[in-house]
Image (cartoon, rainbow, N blue to C red; front, side, top):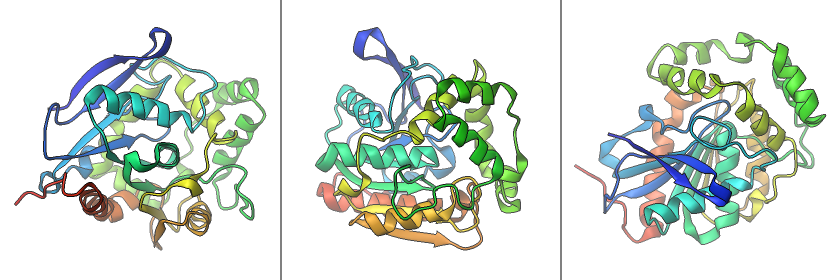
Length: 290
């Protein structure tokens, strides 16, 4: 049973925190970074008791039970992660994220250094100032319009969201099929994330197109990048660019997968890699269960 609680941070603001194994010992903590727009609830379709993982996560500011923080950067994720880990008594931990959460996971690893044991980014964005990368190439037109509005500033982004509608063409047929299976789990984290309005989504998108406040090339932990070659939300060029510029990175590119279908296709293997790397670098903190 996942425990949820409010963690008070600066100036009385709170983060809504999730912990799948409160007080557990002998498990590898994995801090999950959610996508846009999602709540932070850990990704149940990836749970595997045999791997000995303790999934921990939080709602980013502006989502769910977390106080909004306009102007937050992608790099701000490191500060939130530090506060959550400190509150739970976690010294070192692994990080994982999907979509925009992948970018936040990389930022967390870049800033927190040796405290992060290993990092997985699934379908994550590269920084907006990535040289040699055509940042919007291959992105669905609706995604381009949304992020270009964010690049014009908060007022333009707010106007865009006031009339924006869901675009099913952002997702491939394989993505839509994934939504009908185990990854219908997204229904439980997307709808509630925007129930009170698009504030969290707006803050996320503004952060993706602004300076991140960190350099993913500074990550020293082992890094696994997983990307669908057919992704229309975050094109695979982002994963390729990160793989070229991050010294510890390994890229696993799946030819037939899109933004969502990559999760049932390659998510379990990525979690197994994370557990193995985390256990290796922690000196055995993670136990595999028979």
